[in-house]
Length: 345
Image (cartoon, rainbow, N blue to C red):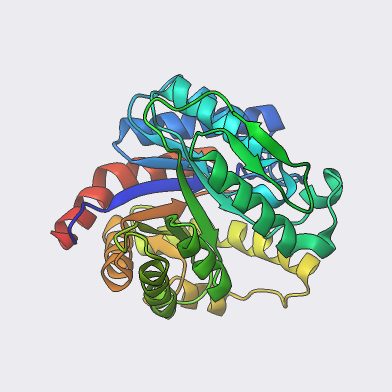
């Protein structure tokens, strides 16, 4: 690998529980997310991504506010989303918020744009789910124009046009680093390549090597569109770290089971099983869970096979408690990261 692999964490700000199993208040969860970001910076991790959701089981509906709180207490870590649901937002306001975050953080803001796998924001903000694809396509087209930081003249079908309109603040060291989050759709990969934007692959089921065709497609499409073929690719995968493989799996399993089954009931999935969990936690599964050595080897395997430049470990897993998450972040920065770099050197 030509560049050191960047290592980050992602969190959706899941509502967690206390020692008695009682759900924490939303404010408590939000403050814990800030503390997790501060610790990630202290142990040398490169990035924290905060998800956007608008439902009972997640505390973060305004990730830029949480990221700004983290920015005020950190020095080096880059700050972004996982993801920003551009389809149900306004591209101008998204750009303004992240340009502001970039300014107050000294140039550390990033945004990962996606269509969103949860749909609560669409009726909440008055958007038609029947226009799911059209909304993202049109708004991404406008956002790409805004990144140029020039007066914008733009016309679409689903939003009022802009005529020679400037948007502020400008970035000190623009353009704003913008990724496209992709769950496995070839069309989404080609879309990212069309705009010459970095690709973030969400690998939440199955082994990372099944995404090789998508990374190859991305490079071919970049070349065909006349863009730099060295644009970064990242991976986002769920996981957890503890002292041993067994400890990590035993701590994670009940929270993973409850979370997966809760979401599964909404989407018509069959209940998950311990056997399925063990498979996903194995060598060819998406769950990056285990001891520091196991996690480091799994990250290095994905990095080699996919040629990625960043790996983001989604540490939040349902009601899994703050103390466990803090310990996992500490192990990630102090033990996993050095071992990953050693394996890839």
